[in-house]
Image 1 (spheres, helix red, strand yellow):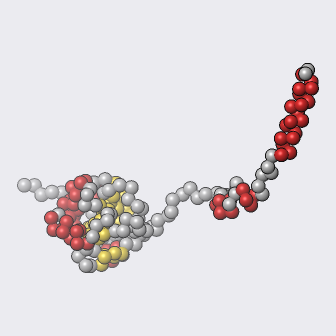
Image 2 (cartoon, helix red, strand yellow; image 1 turned 45 degrees about the horizontal axis):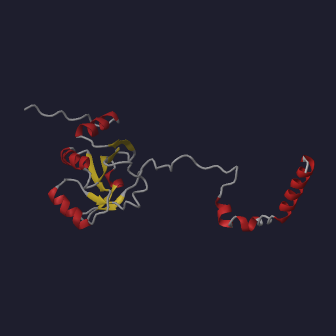
Image 3 (cartoon, helix red, strand yellow; image 1 turned 180 degrees about the horizontal axis):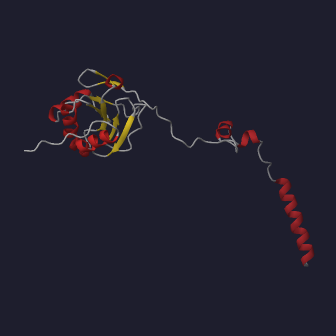
Length: 197
């Protein structure tokens, strides 16, 4: 058989095979409706900016000592909002400095927000061994306060100005001097110089 008859035979075989091939299913059977509708349209745009937080955050919660903390009731003072956990060693290291700020500076209040799954009883027992002068509240790690960013790491500390606005956010442990310097930079009282001994 010469080349020309072979090519004609192959072409006929290809045509016959195409005629016997199963037809593709209708569009409604090929792709489930839920999958199709979940895919964005070619011209759809997706918001790339994170959720905006309010300029003046609110924070109302119960503390482990049975009291109620409301950030709004502390207007006129500087408030240190400290996200921490009992298993976080840098958090434990900064607790004495935060406690000293709360005790020694009348214009500063501190609130500790325990960002972990722990019972109030266990937290109270922990605070007997690691006492602080400021109130501590337990947070739901699955539903943290909406007006604050979910902590990218612990400790995370917010400095709230007397007008209720966030003056500064600290990521990592802080010292008294860090907080007082941030307050002074934001227009608050200058740091108190230690007394000469």
